[in-house]
Image 1 (tube, one colour):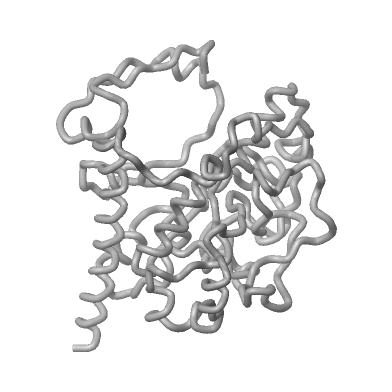
Image 2 (cartoon, helix red, strand yellow):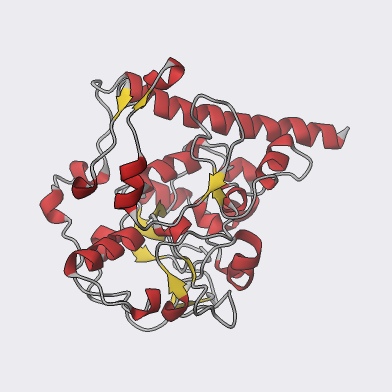
Length: 324
């Protein structure tokens, strides 16, 4: 009887997350002209000029130390560091997703020694396991040495200790939120961390590097839990990533939702999870190269049915190679 109760409870949480995610996308598509909350940059009165690309080759040891052009350097930096403001979305999902998705818990530093084995995450060189919680009682990786001055943390956030995750201060964490914050309950008390009114001290954003940075097959690390930059490749695709384990916190093993997540092979991503096909259909995370050749093979796609509810119109155009 207890097992059946757990199954019902956590299946409901999983279904609620999927429904919530769908509604976010649907409302954005169908009501594009209505007023919506400003993102952090607009709320602060910032423009694109306030977010300059990083020109320094801060990841020079990656990709076999290949010599890149200035634009390629900026592109790789953006690929690994730029969240495009999505930390606001993931913070909302943490608050309103019934405790299922909570990236601050994914980043729990006490998991660092087995992150790769369990979740396929790539620990970022230059950081290490925390020896104690931070000022807010959270277990987050510690940086070794000083941060490079080439990365503006106001724009790109702080290193999380995991490739693809960047940490930002939460602008909503005011004095009232501080008084209500209890890190012990945050880690242990479901009634506390499930509360949609709970304001966390940080927001976590995701970059393209999460899914695409991988261990280099030409120069793999001795210990996959502790790579150096020279052991990493920026665009071949992380063939070890376990998407369900990364994004879903504490699912119950007997629930249907958990079984669906575990059925997804490593190195895959289901980018249509909240689209309109209702199919568990993960695909391999592809390497990013020879884009001009790929685009030469592509043709415009005519969209029909429920997909018309999403942004883009009836025909999705294929960019020409020179424009890409």
